Image (cartoon, rainbow, N blue to C red; front, side, top):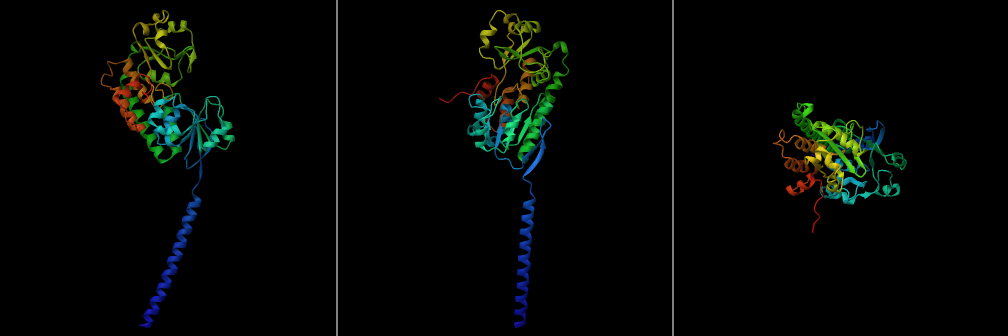
Length: 358
């Protein structure tokens, strides 16, 4: 009996030693594993620059107005701590993503308030290629990722890169958005690609009326006009927001005029004798572009809606089954997690801001 007890005691001691050793080894392995987890990684941004960024991004600065919507769509709208936007300038974005109200406005197109930016402690800053103060931000120790797109492929690449930077959720949502955009491009082009050139209306997209500026070729505006089955009246001019004369507009004589967000008091201008010489004005084919969480027409994630709206505008008989109000409501629910009312969707389609609460 004593021998059995002694034997059991030895077994207990051995088991305890093995258990302790195993736990120690596991703890050691876990510790080693944790040590091996990288805190940074290197990506290549859309300028071609290699940028070292944190693997765990919790706070974001974004100086590209349109890209703030992209972050919101990819599940990181609540991580924006520094922005270029204001609630007055982008009321729909602040409505669908109220977390934007916590972000500090520290950027402009021309400069950045580095002192205020540092107070927000961003892990990363997104910036468009056209802005010139990236070195100032990088010198403050904040990684800068530059982005840009002038066509639909680059738009998809912008989503893909941003999603990859943000992590698993961002990747999944960027894939979903790109699939949606591809499906809508395919749907629209399956109809408009067979339209003869002489049946494609000339479309003039006006950025502002004073000074008179238009959007030409080699731009996303030119891209969606062509996809929608139109011809860019200003296509011979390359780039965005190019100043032109009224004589040039009369020479182009567009069939449709689409007015961007910065075209206030358009009615008084269009009622002038000189504008009445333009075919689009004579035929009441002058419309305001939709304007939502971001402007649909200009470097926006809502280009996916823009191509559908523009196609129905230019060729209503070929897209009579397309319910753009329903499509807008579904898009906002799917990608911005916001349930638009029909009235709100109509405001966006008319280029109008949300109605302020009484």
